[in-house]
Figure 1 (cartoon, rainbow, N blue to C red):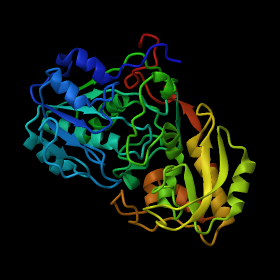
Figure 2: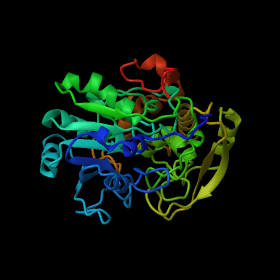
Figure 3: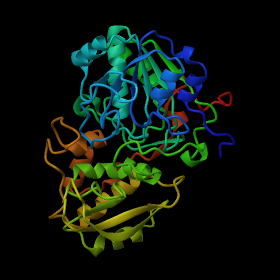
Figure 4: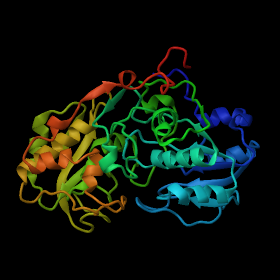
Length: 400
């Protein structure tokens, strides 16, 4: 357990705004960019004298008022009066022109990532880093904890050539085990140079955060990173059950427990019984009926299961989701299916949604052929064994 409260990168910057550099700062942020007292980072930075002149918003918008696959259209921030430039689904020349129009010389990233490859905030960061590399704009990351911890990686990597999208641009694991600052260092040392780009990058590190720290032990308040991520347990579940977004089962969107509820009209009591017999580590299952208010099966009562995470330290979200997928495919072979190409509201790219989420066509093809999904799971590995010192910031004894 962390003895002291974790100090986020924005707290460190507020104590010394000069470390941000730049004379015209564009803050890439949203409603998760908060101070420990739950004020907004942008307000605190402006009050501290940081020369913030523009705001960049990601998926869900600056204020987080819209659902997945959407962004807001506000031209100015109501509190500061700063212009807002929406970056969601903008990349390449379009994003270069947007940043140029903003007039900034430094982009500062301050958002709460979830620790899952197919969560899009890190790809907004990635796209803006590419633009920074092309345009010569400096890039700074105000680091925050990985809510899933930084001890292990889990799940497969990504076949970039065949399945890169806005839910995965780089070959990292589903549970990647890094902070946003560490990801930025990874991109800048391995991904961007391969594209002929190198970014003038700085990471404002946290203090009193350790890789094995449970988020509750940081003593930081949990701010839901998006409308369908209300709790920390939801975040852990999403790392695995997010794969069900690519299937014809409801993943619980439109309920108060998204990604913890999985169901469909064709599910009966056999699924809960099967899953309870597995005694999967760190999680329990119970049978449940629910009626989504929107998204899949909106207004219909469906039957399924609820995941109850009982021990985050041993819970493997990816393995759990594959166990569930195997059970559904075995019990309901004539009803279960993957969504056809192009059908997923928050990923407009062509192709099967589940392929983009998994990182290749391997999962879908295995299940459709009657093979085990769980057999594809590469297991978990220690973060230290996957990434080098050029990436890691919080694993050495010298890190506070």
